[in-house]
Amino acid sequence: MSAFSKRSAAKNALACVSGSPEWPNCSTRSRRFATASGRQGRPPAMRSRGSGTWKPCSHVGDLLFCRAGVHVRAPSRLIDAEVATTSMLYFTHRRDPRRTDDLAVGWGSNSQYRTKFHRFYDDPDGLHLNWDGAQYLEDGYRASEQDANADLPLERRRELLLHRYFVIAPLPADEDKGDWFPYGDRLTLRTATWPLEADAVLPDPGH
Image (tube, rainbow, N blue to C red; front, side):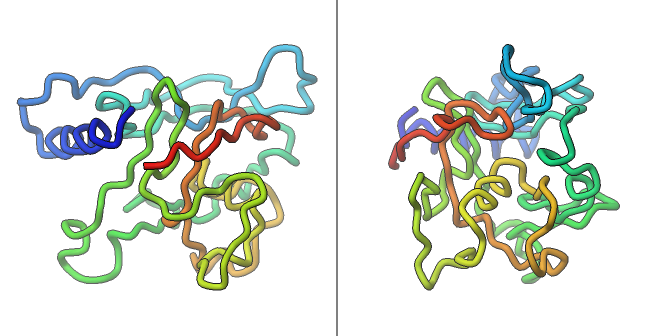
């Protein structure tokens, strides 16, 4: 998908939020995005797998508007139940009673109106996580001193960006303070199977 068509999709999404009837393609599709699943032929102890969808996701074209809710089974070393259900949930304005963090929170009455829409895409070129992020988390990525997540290992940054929260124990230091900043990271994946396959990360598609 071109950068122009992605910008158009974002406009469609905003129209859908406001309830505008101009965009008949604001439909709900039962497609899973960034959910834990596994491939056939791999030992069950080596993978996580979805065991049911209780809430379908919603797309506007290729733009993800609302993620699906799924039940997942996995060994605790791949997904720790306590960590996955209690760690800070990023890219989310509110999800009571869970702790959440979003750029649209905490800086005044106009924060929601002045904050850009988070853009995640699912198209033939791959799964694009946080399309507008500045740092592409490719293999061998080295954080600069100005990087807000410089102290977080690459694998954990990918974990946080993919799931929007941590799923593996132990949690990083100071996780309870919500000090991590996944909003500057982006990644394109061939598949969102968890744990990530060796060839899951695709070259930077650019903008």
